[in-house]
Image (tube, rainbow, N blue to C red; front, side, top):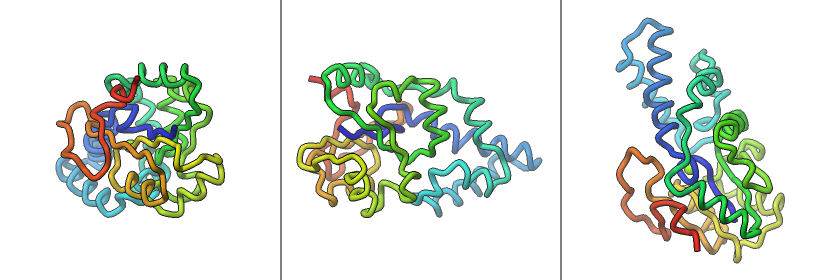
Length: 207
Ligand SMILES: [Mg+2]
């Protein structure tokens, strides 16, 4: 079983708050500029990088913005939460003896901060950041490399993620059981159905 982290197990409300509210506010304060102005400028910059490895990279944004985002993330880490039903799902899935690997686009530093708060890594045989491969999960070249590293059978491996382009890449590679999480952010409504089988929460997969 291959599981994504943010928006699949952990509430994307944290990441949306961090990037859309906390970062613009801190940057505006540092620059002595209006928060709304900085926010609009940042959202445009995020959009240009969406889907690339840089988009997920704390180093990239720290360098680009001249601002220590790692420190800001650590200072706000108490806001990190599991999605409803996710911790119970992990507890039962790991007790069942299934092989479980976390596969995330999050930077290794983000992974460490989130594990420090949630204890997430304790449920997994290993945690892999796509930064180790130098490409995001959206990339077709990511999947053959992951299979080589882990030695899984695509025909019998379950993969759960909340990102449609990532799910598309996994399905195109040949992963048979690809499942979308349709409510990655608990503060937002459920997403409209896409082309993959969907669950509102991984809790629905227990049984
Ligand atoms: Mg995700």
